[in-house]
Length: 383
Image: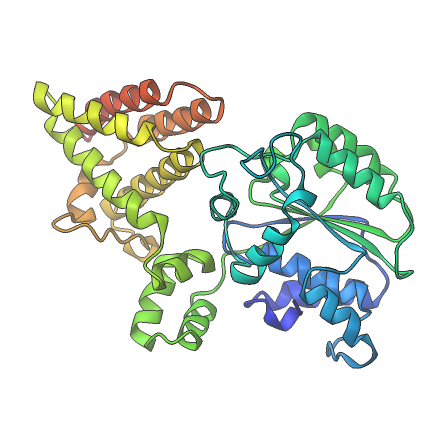
């Protein structure tokens, strides 16, 4: 994947090229960006630039064989680590090497894909993957060897925040004292979840949301009419993965918005209404049957929807990108029920629910408790 294949982000491409051309390549770099902003494609393009000694124009020339290897993610000096879990295919001690063929296909088909897309791709969507100590041991072993082709050895750690403490501590020594010509590229969405001792030793590069114009242009190249491309680009809010999902009508948000609407409608009816309380309990049962990654994704969607409703309520329409496609549901009519007297408590309860889901709490209890609290909070009076 060459730099020209990565959507937008010209200033980041320029920075990476200049550091490579001047020989100032940091041995540990942390690419931070939200889903769909191109952190993984950029890391792979940068690795290819270094491994193949590409020039500013990225002409293949004598490096054609190297570029072919990198394009297929089969270069012997390009290594990957990413979250995995035991599955029907791998019964124990799962590590990234067990899923390399799946990974190559995933990156080819969904280079901007998110963590749930990856879990679904390898059939572990009901589990919570991680980068564990077995992975860290593999990485240390690989990078202690000399490079096959005499140049750089590069490790891309995707979703680096999924490293557990044991793996983080094992990799810390490698980051502190890397072998010669070894580059570690950590790619993450949540900087705060990476331990401080690793963060402080990395050169950090923050990726902004992609420009609407860049997303719309890419969607038009994918066959959309300009008006529809512009509408989807706005709704995607800088997330190219979401834009592609909306284009293909395959976005998990389309499912989440139905759950969200059913949830808030039941919550509105539930005050002093036993039948509606039963609806909320049944709704909680249904959501609790899904995998924990799906539950976390849904709760994060709820956080976005609630914040967007608040912006609508306070007439900051230019910052509102969310569209809810459920029939007879108008976000602007819901917005007045989200205000200064309940927004903090609603957000706090949603974040607590995410915390408990991550720690394997009883999902049925978590969602039932959250539903009852939401009922009370949505009926709170504005100041």
